[in-house]
Image (tube, rainbow, N blue to C red; front, side):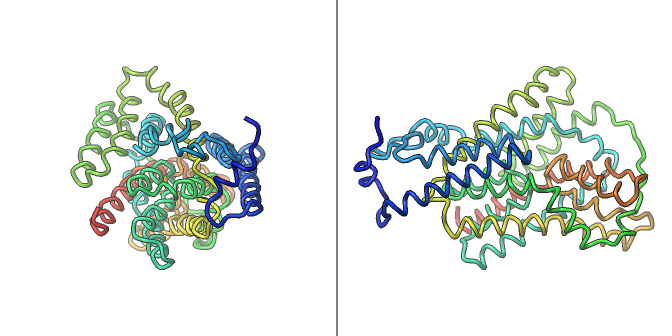
Length: 387
């Protein structure tokens, strides 16, 4: 059907002029184009930022019915997809199966102390929650915003859905995945501000231990059971993550593990990205809240990084064998990007310093920590909000 200006006028939100509508449309086209540019030219999380950016362009084309009919309100193809895959938390769970199949917990078994950094690096989540409340967001919104600091997009989406915050899905997802892609830019200045050159040069011994196949098989099962008993709300995410890891480690489902790591991951990520992008209508996205969410997302990332570094420095007060404080920053769940950033920084200070295994151990523990932190928010906020 040829563009109908009169029909557009009839469907404009109350109080919106045609000029204002088209200005907002162009702004959203520019935002979508920027995300696509960052994905292609800068290689920032291209598998997510590109479909999110394209989805943002799609849903802001005048009179489009891909999300909902502008006249009847009936859901379009992406409206149906959203309700069938994101609103019921299917996509986040499927992504965690894929992530679990990718993770090798062996470095964590060999340096179990790193598990604590996966908890310490979630500090920014709760600091950001307090900040969001002070800025006027309600408790549920503050909880979902805080989870951005976990550097874990699926957990952010999962918590937002559990709190029925559809209007914030777009800003939260863009913030979470954008800052995940900017880990190599965000973390180094924060780490350098909190550490001395001598601290960044600290070398750590790594003792290779044999980890039995039985241990690797029992680990995901026990983690699921223990987490489920402590926080039943965590079962969907932690269970999916550990199920993916069990597929990897069992040794009899090699093809299925490979499929989860590749085909499942790519397909779900692609559909998740474009579906989230189609929630970014100008009316929902161009708000003061969006700017605040982007700012608080950066705040959360900075404080998560700082929390891990400061925790490592605190532990060093009581240890003879010192920990390189940079390893603490790898406790966020941006796996394996954060571990690589830490190793590169260590090598820049001392070409012979190798702390990759400890960083990876902290990084995979951060993947667990982000899920647990998200589950804690679901429990605590749910009780306080009477959900």
